[in-house]
Amino acid sequence: MAGVKKAKPDLTKKVHEVPHKPGVYLMRDRFNRVIYVGKARDLRKRVGSYFMPSKVAVADLKTRAMLDAVWDFETHTVQSEAESILLEGKLIKEYRPRYNVSFRDDKRFLLVKVDQSEEWPRFRLARFKKDDNARYFGPYAHAGALRQTLNFMRKKFGVLTFGRGSPTERELKSSTYQVPMKLSEITPEIYRERVAQACEFLEGHSREMMAELEKQMRAQAEKLDFEKAAELRNMLDDLRRTTRPTRRFTRGSLPTTIEPEADLRALADALQLPKIPRVMECFDISNISTTHVVASMVCFRDGMPDKNCYRRYRIRTVAGQDDFASMAEVVRRRYSRILLEAREANPEAAEFSQENPAEAIHRLRHRDQVPLDNLPVTPQDPS
Image (cartoon, rainbow, N blue to C red; front, top):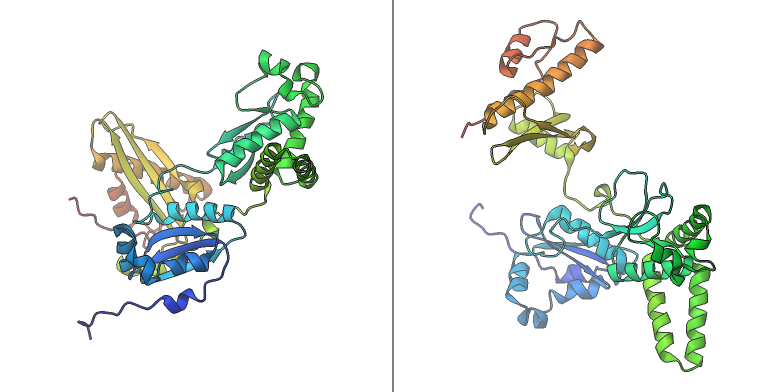
């Protein structure tokens, strides 16, 4: 019956199926949209706390509102707490849930970058991984532990951290880098050997070094120097957090409700297309103070983003703010180039033109050499 309201499911039984393991959980509303993403050391305890009447009674207004909207949840286990932090951040950026505040901006986890093409390579922190032939380690969930690890590497391996270029006069003479010789007493080639050892350490080849630090910690405890022992213990914790192997969560490995094939079929039905669109190109115009007009194009293949085909255009022929004229220029440039490339590949199958795109499509549809029956033209409301 259409007027009957669907009853909210009882999720307390489902909670008992959640494992006692670290991981992330996703709360979904009645439309199956993700409204909250969280992490936990123990998923069973954390998720179960949301459905305990005693906890709900003392929850704040925001939590109560979220629980009123929750109709289902799902969990994903990971191997460590650090992995749960990384996965939580990825999922929040993916879904942008309404009840999450952290991680919704463009801030990313820290990486360690070392450019081995430099004469004196340095270990620096970075937020983005670029295609610059440098070597990257991470991402790292614990920024404080990572900085302590870099400090340890500077003293243990005598490598340069932060800064740029060749070592300064102060760094050359500093005893911090004396392992066993100062930087002023070695050549760049010898220094590169230090860098290679530090890279192996960041890769996780650190068992012997960890064992030595643990031995030192126990020796200090036996001497009743508990302050030094605690310092070594904290250092060990930071190093283990940083060098412990963690998985890298990419877009393809994230849990998702996107079904490309089903979405494409729905789009084909909505637009009354004769077949499923395998390649889609979408354009947008951006104006900055009417003086700088640019266009962007995104491309989807089989329902998934094809970022290698993304393009950006600088508008050349349109003066002022005119989105329609700007769109016409970009479409003309894009598909004129495609027709030109098609003509070079097969002169009998395509013809290059700089005329208006709508007029070109109308003309070409009446020519035998270019079959454009499968090119849908969807009218757009000018408003």
